[in-house]
Each structure stands twice: as C-alpha cells, then as structure tokens.
Image 1 (spheres, one colour):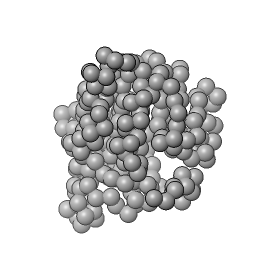
Image 2: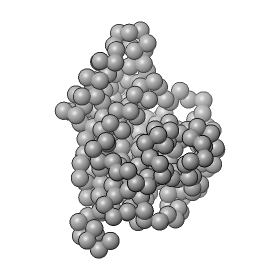
Image 3: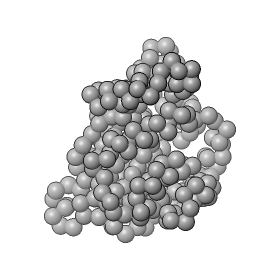
Image 4: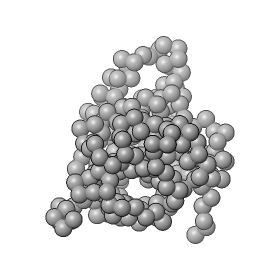
Length: 250
C-alpha cells in the first residue's frame, strides 16, 4: 500500500469549491443533535481539515485536542483557534494518546480512511470510562443524492463519485452500513440518527437561500424533519460507547 501524502491531498483539492454556506449550517445542526450526549470533559477531534468544526469545538470545550496528519492543515486551523487547543501531527494509526477523553469526534472523516476497522479499534484505547465516540458521515441515501442517481449523474446511491474520490473518500455509507462498521469494531451503539432532511444539493440550497426562495424557517424545518426520517438526511451519525463487558473492567 502506498504512503499517503496528506499535505499534498489538501493542496491538490484546495482549488475545489467543496464547502458551502450549507455546510456551516449543517455543523451547527449536528452539534445540536449531539447536545444531550455531550460531556464537559476532555475532548478529541480526529481530523480538522481547515478548522471549521474545530472552531465550534473550541467554543464548547475547554480541553480540546486535535489529531491531524497534514501539518499544513494544523497551521491553518491553529491560526483560527489560537493557543488553547493542543494539536498532534500524526496519522490515527500511529498516534499515541492517553485514555482520558470524554468526547471523541470523528466527523466526516471515517469515509476517508484506508483501514477503518483498525482505526475504530484503536480509538477505544483513548476513551475515558463513560466516554462516547461521535461519528458522522455523508449519507448515501440523501434525497438529493438519490435524485442525482435517477438523473444519471451518479451510478448508484453508495457510489464514490470522482469528485469524492479526489477529495479522499474511500466509501459512501448509509445509516445501516455505518452502524455495521462500528459494531464490527467492537463498539456499542447507544444512539443513531440523521442530521437535516436534504431535498437539494449543497449548491442548490445555497442559491435558494441567496435568492430568498427559502429561509431559516425552511432550513430549521428540514432539520426537524431529519429527526423523523434519519435515512433521508444529509449526514447520518452514531453515538458509541464501550461494550458493557469492557466498561466493567476499565
């Protein structure tokens, strides 16, 4: 297996318009969805890209650590969050961390990994007793994606498109395949769901907001509808804990 150059992957994709105003809204909705399960203690973010989520986590958690394999991305993110956040420049496979984290976030990152099972098993060593792992991924069954399939733009719901491949995606999950992935790595899933019922593509939502065809009430309603129809959301998530048998021995 070839060694990945994470800085080069970032630089190769820097010209792509991959993030939208919708993404900022989705991040807020996602944290709202996680709210009831969040703890106040030490928190770990796995992968930061350019720090959009890191900024939100830094506002929410006093003790925040970030693992990121691309040093360039650490530099970009550090400028946004300041000196209060600790950064570890390492791949997930090689990082050595203490088992002290109450919250671990793997957000829109699992689909980028080459050996997802190995990483998911390693993460269990970093969780404090009673801690939780929060995983979210883009959803193969989002209505906007299913429409693209019917239009012939995507081969099938779970296909990895060329644009996704260039951005480092290795897989496209549904809620059920995500659930299976984490359970196969030995995790107990305590909650699963979706964030934001997604009728349109990102750029279409942004254009509709810009032209006031839709407004904040429409977006909030889609977020609420996503709680009813998680399989049809922009992102799907699982909240994981150590199996009960392991909790007793920690």
